[in-house]
Image (cartoon, rainbow, N blue to C red; front, side, top):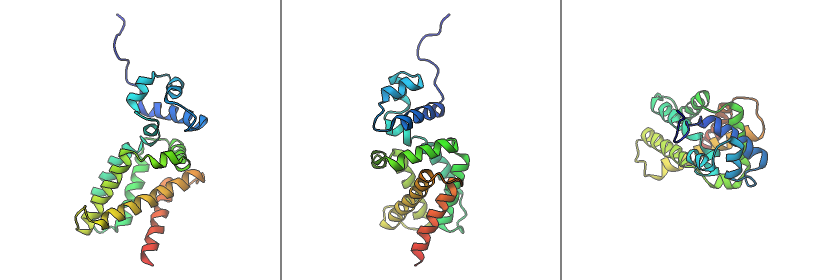
Length: 193
């Protein structure tokens, strides 16, 4: 008997990698979701089920690393300096990341070179900042609603994104966690002057 109904779910990572190849090849602003769906062999409706927007397709894998970062921050030793704890959490996220390293590089390069993507921060990106705010507030023993933890989280996140952008755009052969650590060290050096 033939199977009816919705087809089996495709592997999201495989779909994302193939879709990213199309976006990179044709250009973010030049390719439509319909074209991407054709390229990856899915209906437009199915592609939208996985990725509601083109930006979600590019930003999406940050969501999977979010849980890793949160867990690493909650497990951080209280004696570890705050910036070191954040750098370690990011290193763990990259070590356990779902993306192949080259897929991460291409995705981050696309974000770094596409103003529209930079302006459309994903929900996961905002949750990442919220988790940083909570971590910093706990460490400083202040409410999350105060300016200090919010400003510090924004600065840390901006530094990490800049490190990742440079790693991707410059084809840095080192692991991305080193670029993040260097960016955070730059921020720490500024704070110490």
